[in-house]
Image (tube, rainbow, N blue to C red; front, side, top):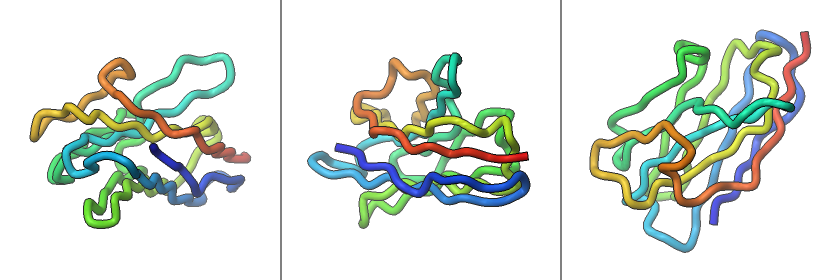
Length: 125
């Protein structure tokens, strides 16, 4: 199970921090990712971290503004979002690839096994 939280309404240039708590499986064995879906658009990759958290990947659109991190002891993955833009408005989903190879960072939806319920992020201009 994945439970995401931290979404909300923020002005452009502001910050939000999303968190996703995992339970019921071995968190440290899973690569963790964040995706987002805007109305009328497909779900897209945002950021992800390897099992250990030592490696990360980001979509070009968020590089330098978003930071993904994880705490394996607490079973939590976070997404710090700074300098938010109106185009970042979407429902954000956390996801887990529970079969991830040690250093692998999946970036497609089909590679993930578990999904959280989504949390709305709205950035006003």
